[in-house]
Length: 334
Image (cartoon, rainbow, N blue to C red; front, top):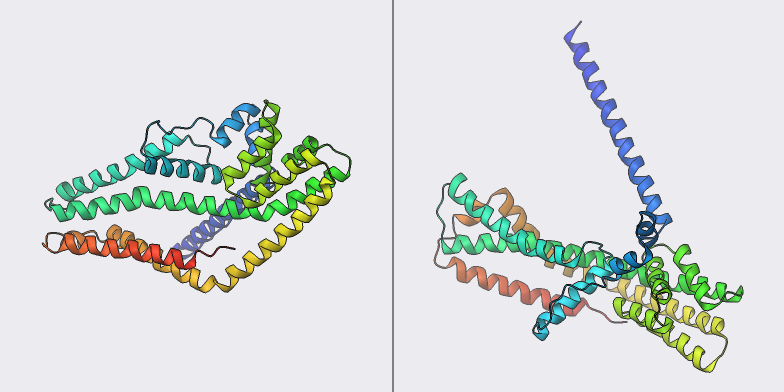
């Protein structure tokens, strides 16, 4: 057979295999995404065989890994980290994540030292240790924390967008004649993540003996949401003084929607400044990681200079100061 035809046949087969593989991946991704939108994380965990109590402890992170007796600053940081994991809906235990964040930079750092000695054949100096340790910390600890914080922020924003819809579903349940507990249980199966799972946790806490007000107040504190706090106050006032709860919550839903519309308007007007701030904050770290990964000798060859460490520390301090100032400038409260 003509070699040209054989080559053409091979190329056609490769093209067909790539097309079929791409179609299979797209179908798998689409089906997984559709399934994820159809149910929330709480129902998914229960469907995998976990009990309601186990699911509640996993999502609420009831078993805190924060040791007792930490200094106030470290204790606040640890609790903030755990709240971020709750908002990111991470099911991995806190201790395992903290161990990864501590071990990953050390593994990268010692791996770089071995590469410098064995593969690149260059000596170890104080400047090279500083630059390697910085790269290891940024790649092994800072980037995972930034990714977790980004996921938590997106989940929190989605929670705020879903909350007025959840209030409408709750009001319709009350007007249909359901009691408060049954109307809340309706949200756990009708609403997707993240709000469906969170109301499900509140219902599970009530099932295991907690007061409804305390369960909803804990949910509001976990997400640091003023809208949820107003919802809890409305339920408490109606429980003590009476009144038309459906009308109260309908007014609350309208107020929350108007507040969210104002928030989106402010974000739209400040989008250019926020995007500039994000680019100025992320670009130096991205450039440093990319350049060090592709050409580490670019930094290691000049790390022996006596002015390298003072200059590097000064650049780092200036970068941190710039990030803090930019964050203050674009952190708009509505």
